[in-house]
Length: 333
Image (cartoon, rainbow, N blue to C red):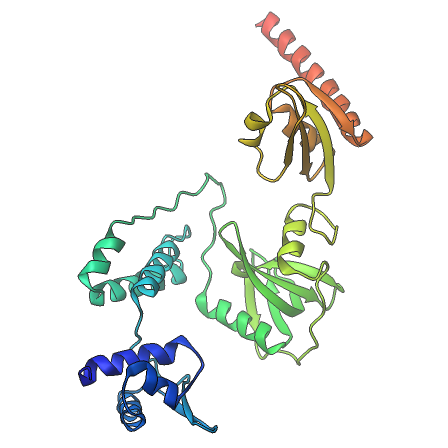
């Protein structure tokens, strides 16, 4: 029989692995008697672990949530995954972000107690967040505000808040909160705006909550039925419930499919004869779609629709005027 301390750690690890454990199964897994299981459960309770007894033919145990956070036990894979996640969270781009600072403190705490074999593996990983240049850096998000919004989402309670980046631009909002999401480094709230009678997406860093919350509500169904589909569509500028681009077309390019595929993120590339390919791509407007295709610097045949052909003609006229103007400026300089 293993020593008491090792046995307690093994028992705690099992209790964390699933919701309910029959006492007989715990005894079998630990190769101890049912009486020893009961005694070890009592020891863990004395250490602050809220282990509840589960009624049933064989009886059992469940590790429940308590009023305080007791010491936790992680296996090697869990410890590595947790530290990697915390290191990524600690590299949040917004300076002074409370969530990033809390993640950094948690990471330091875990590293101090981590076995040397794991600490060496984690120390070999260094994550550096590189953000694209921007004139408007990402604003930090208050962790308490984020938790309060998430709690309202879970409880289906109407939220009341002021919204805006400037004090003179904070219209009062009443919304039914449905989802908290992240997109491109920012936190957003997806909600039904009760005053505007439509779905809206709000930046969490611009929300100033008013208390108390409003009444409970019955959740509505998002367009498309899926939050990811809806959000992707909104940020693409589409009202389509499928979340697709509002403008989508197909062309033939005088380039090998393998070459075009290297620079196409969400388009469809197909072989179309020697050194030619068919490309189906989407964008938020027809001129932007035409420009996206033109960046491949190859001869183009438009398959459809006509809106894409018209967009190429529109850009051709614009570029011709630009080229003529540049030539005139150059000749007079």
